[in-house]
Length: 233
Image (cartoon, rainbow, N blue to C red; front, side):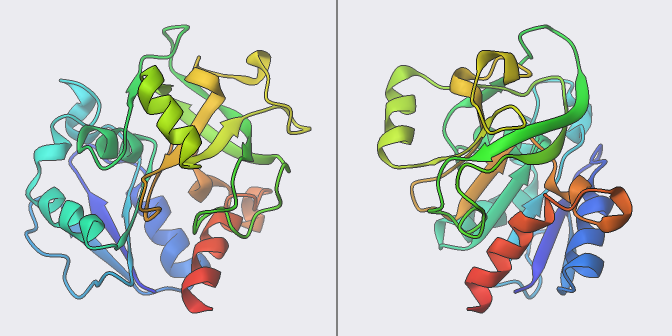
């Protein structure tokens, strides 16, 4: 598997993801500029990463301008053809704005930017990035966002549950999903979801920031390992 990392004006986690994909996971990695009109040599067997940051300065609405970048036409096409797309933080917001994922990310309920280590728990093993994780075991993965409160209508939320599309929920160190463990007011503690086709993933936490021994935490690397184990099986 190869990775493609999309870079927008204002992206600030692109180099982190490039480093993890290329140096830590030892995968060929392509850098895709927002004005590009092709995915280079990437195919539906590969994964497009949409990193965190502040694409276009978040001046209109998080992800709203990035959604109309030329490269996104190819990303949407890639997803619709069954290729993997994984959005992290601002990338999650962009995927929702692009309608590749349902719902929206709103301002945190306390109206403040939050940056901290945060426990999340996988709520399904039925996805490429969670299949290799231990059910119910909390992972310590950093968060850093001001608009990370996931919201969906009751109808959409019911569909997410029925289709087993909720990937992660915020929890405490023991894996308990409680209101006190919810850092931003996300509906039902939701931290990450996938699409019905199970090839598009979005999450607010940053697994690339917890993927190396030098950082003292490798919980995030498990998600990358899970994806690669499935593809390389």
